Structure formats: C-alpha cells, structure tokens
Image 1: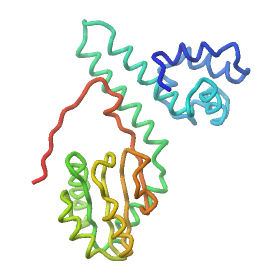
Image 2: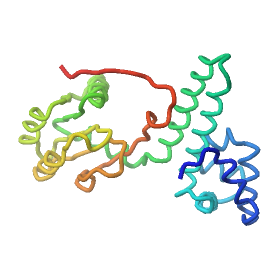
Image 3: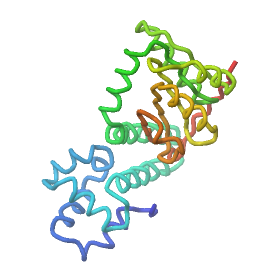
Length: 242
C-alpha cells in the first residue's frame, strides 16, 4: 500500500485505535520528521511501547509492517519538502536527496544483519582466491570492493563478463570466495552460482531484491534498499566495462 498522505491515512483509523495505537499516532503526528528517520527500536523507546506494538499499528492501517509505513512516511515528507515552491528549488532538491539518503541509511541498519557482515569478513580473511562479480552499474561496486580489499592486503579479481565468470567458476574450490553484486535478476547467474557451490566455493550475494532464484544456494545473502526507486532527484552515472 502506498497512500498519498500516510498521516491522513493514519488519522482516518484513529477512532478505531486502541490506547496504545492512539499514543503512537499522536506522537507520529506531532513528530513526523523524527518518526520517519530514526530506527524502530529508538522510536519504540521514545513512545514507551514495544517494537511489536509499532508493527501491529502499521498493519492495522494497511501496511505490511512498521518499516513499510515509515518509508512511505519518509517519501511523503521528502515529496512535500521538494514541492514547496519554485523559490529555492535547488535547495529543496538538495534537501530531498539528503533526506532520501538519511532514510535509506536508517533502513540499512535494520535490513542488514550484522552477523551476515561478520560472515562475509571471515570468508574474505580465509579465502585463497576472491572473485568479485558485477555487471554494468554493479561492476563499479565490484571494482570499489577490489580496490578497498587491495588496500588491506587482500588480492582479488573483479569480473564483469560471463565468459570470465564461467572460467572462474570452473576453477574455484573450497577455500575460494565469490562475491556477487546485482540489483535484480536481469543477469542470470543461476548456473554459475550452482557450479560454484558444487565445487565447494563460498558464495556471497549483495543485491536489492528478495526474489533471486539462487538465493538458497548463497552462503550469505544481503538485501540493500534501492534508493533510486524513491528519490525524485536522479543522479545519472554511466559505466562501461573495459
């Protein structure tokens, strides 16, 4: 669900709320900017309710959970700020960008499991060979990771084409690591991930979708928020694998 104004949506249910729901609603109405940016845990502490109470509240007004409600609220507030008139339009655009990134940094703190990050770090330390895979825009991520690992003394290879990936998958073994960056399922990596797992290789996938067909084959699967879907202000960047 994605109502135009989640505050109005919330108020429309007010008469049917429990006392706890009303406490949550009143606080959000009076502190919408803060409620849209801080973590669920911190908000629950401020209102003196549980995280599960926030989740029930959001579901009661039509959302899958409180995280979805908060993201919708944040997008609405950003949109309101960005449409505040022609005067200062550049400033509004800048604030829109900043607010979007603040929102998604908060989202990452809740969707990225610290234990997954620790598993990736341990896999990097233990690996004999590290292959980092990306395509088009995600190849930039692969290159950046290769550069940062290199500065820490870890040798790795960034791969951007399926031929090189196929060659890599044919030689990796139990002490090797493949890290795959992908936004969605536009590039079919299924057979390559399956081959890596058959050879005992550790596979890490960093993506922006829950629904990759090879998810269960990955040792670690990290889903990042996709800011480009929600920001009204676009950054255009072209990349080419050479």
